Image (cartoon, rainbow, N blue to C red; front, side, top):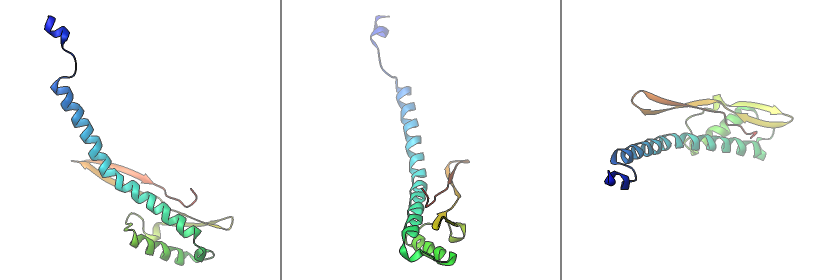
Length: 121
């Protein structure tokens, strides 16, 4: 009885469970991170196009071509030029897109991420 009163801390099973949870979170984060980085890059491309003086008064085709060139340089594959919604709000060009990315987590578990990058942000 005196021996149990002096024992404190976690057992081996507790440590193993914490390691498993930490590994699962780390692996999931490594799988999801590229999708978020690509979303930020798409939003950045939209902002570059909107702020480009050559795009003032450009046609829809010119805007889509500009996006295509920049997307190829940055290896953007989630959004195609046809997926871009191009609006003119108060004389200012606004670009936006809506897309989803499916990230396989393991087995038949898949995480679906919805993204809506826009130049208006």
